[in-house]
Image 1 (cartoon, rainbow, N blue to C red):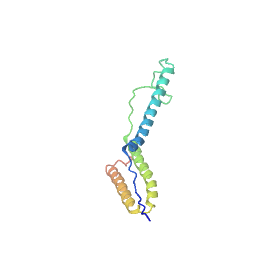
Image 2 (image 1 turned 30 degrees about the vertical axis):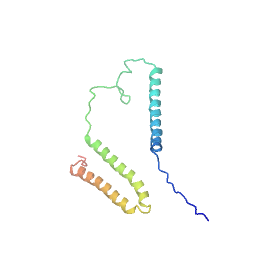
Image 3 (image 1 turned 135 degrees about the vertical axis):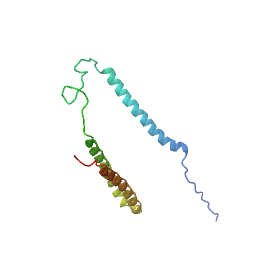
Image 4 (image 1 turned 90 degrees about the vertical axis):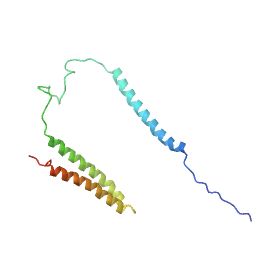
Amino acid sequence: MPESTTVHTTAVPLAADYFQSYSVVGLLAVVGVLFVAVAFGAGRLLRPVVPTPEKLLTYECGVDPVGEGWAHTQIRYYVYAFLYVIFAVDSIFLFPWATVFAAPGYGGTTLVEMFIFLGFLAVGLLYAWKKGVLEWT
C-alpha cells in the first residue's frame, strides 16, 4: 500500500493583497474629496452674486452690530466647558471598557489600564482644583 504524502501549504499574504485593501480606502478618500470639491464648485457657479450693504453686515443672532466687536467674557466658562468635555470623554471610554472587562482573559489588564486612565484624569482635576479654577467667585 503506497504512502500518501500530504503537503501543507500556508497562505502567506502577499504585499499586493495588503496594499490592495489600502488602495480601496485611498480611492474612497479621493472620491469623497472630489465629490465635495464638485459640490462646492457647482454651488459657486450656480449661486446668484448680488452684494448689498445689508448682506455685507456682520450678522449676530438677528441683532444689528452696535459698538465694538470686542466683549469681555469670563474664562471660567471655558474652563468648565473644558472640564465637561474631559469627563464626557471619560464616560465614553468607560462603556467599551466594561464590555471588554467582561471578556475572558482581559480582566486584569483592562482593570490596570482603566485605573491608569482614571489616574490621569484625577491628576488633572486635582491640578485644576489646586489652581482655584473650580472656585466660582
